[in-house]
Each structure stands twice: as C-alpha cells, then as structure tokens.
Image (cartoon, rainbow, N blue to C red; front, side):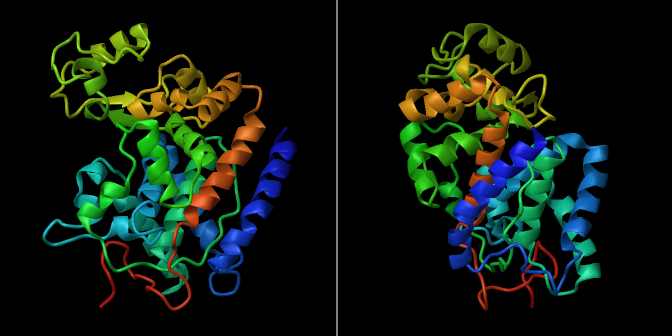
Length: 327
C-alpha cells in the first residue's frame, strides 16, 4: 500500500512540476548551498511533535495562511510595532507556533547562514507536520524568497470558516486553486482544534436571533448538542474543540466521514455538500477505501498551493530572523 501511495504521489508531482518550474521552484534548490536543510527542519519537527503533537495542525494552517495573502512569502511571520501586520489581524490571532518557527530558522541559520528563506521553512514544516501525523509525504519544491510587506487588512483574502461555497471558490481561485483543491485541502481539518467562536453562530445565532434555538439546520442534531455541551455560549472565546473528534492528531480520511454525516465543524465544511463535484469527492472518500488516492491528491494540492505567487530569483530577501525584515 505504501509503495502504491508513493507511486500515485510521484505521478501527481510530475503533473504539477511544469507549474513549479515556471516559478523557479524545484526540489534540488538547496542541494549545493544547504543540502542538510530538510534534515535540520525534520529534527526540530520530530522533537516538537513528540512533546506537543497537537501543534501539527496549527503549523499546517500557518503555511496555508501565508500562501493566501501575498503568496507564499513568509509575510504571516512578520511583526509590526503598531500591530498592523498579518499576524495581528483577527483571522490570524489564533495561529500558534511562531516561536517554534523562529527556533527552526535559528537551527537552519546555524547550518547554512543567509541561505534558506522563512517561506521555504514554512513549506517544509507544513509537509512534515502532515507526514509526522501519519499523512502523505511529498517532495517540496523550494526557492521561495521572503517578502518585506505584511498588512493586516489584506487577510481578507483568507477563506473564513463562515464561507459558503461561492465565496470559497472565489478565494481559492484568486491563488489559482480549483474546486478539487478546495475539497482536498479542506481535509487538513483532520488534524488540529478550533476555538468555539469560529463556529458557535451555527449553535446560537444562525439567523441573527441570538438564542439557543437559532441553530444551523444543516448540522446533524446529535453533533450539534455535543458541540453545545462544549461551547456554552456565543461569548466563549477560550474553549478548544477537536475538528476531527477521536483522531484529531492523526492525518486520515475521517474528516470526509464526518462531513458526509453533516458533522463538519465549520460552515465551510458543510458547504462542500452543496456542490455536486465536492459532495461526490466527500462521499467517495468517506468510505475510507481510497486513502492512497486522497493522500496523492493532498500532496499535489499542497504543492500547487505552495506555488502561489512566490518571490524568486532576486526578488525579496532571505531573512535572518523570520519575524523581522533585514536591515
């Protein structure tokens, strides 16, 4: 099974290779300048996830949030003295792992000073977060450079968890991702947790009435009651809920089983059932019989997302620290 999955991934990687080539990204980019970069990143990842396996989801999410705003340029990592950077915007205030990324960057800098971008480090971290959670492995095209601009209001480009299918497809199309990428990458919700406020309107304020009976009728009733037992009100800003209950630390196809039963946590999860193509994909993989196929699809969509408008060549810079531009 493992060899079959590897073959499927290899075939899909070949299909997207031309796109990556046009952007000057390739997997051998650091073969001479920093051949140990992937080993250095993975050593830090293994150490971190052995202590805190729940960090895998947030690290995957961070790469996603980076690529949807200004392309994959590490701009989500930048600090701002007046709190106007991407990380200060509401969609990014629940991101975790910034300190860990700095630790990885320091280790890479020690091995290969002034060579590897923070954007590339994020891409490698995301891949290893999935793989170390028992998900697929893929070869990451590298060669991104770091941007120097990070603006909080540009996070409007991020797909909110409250989105319907039309909004989702529009935001994905803006970074050259299609409906298949949408349903495939949504399954990243198989690992990690979410705060109640990201979905509690489905429990208490679906039509704006703000009362316990104002519920989302598309949410499966027993699952809704379970969520209400964890998220007591619209004002709960601290409670965390598993996005894939029972296996939120394992990258698998259980996400599709949940969505097919109307137990997707977010509006955006439920929206996948409103389109014939994405609904069919959900139902196919809800059977659990096509794990290798899904793993190959996820790898291909991650590579495609990672190729979203990267800075390459002489563009941008290689930051010494990920949270500040070079001076």
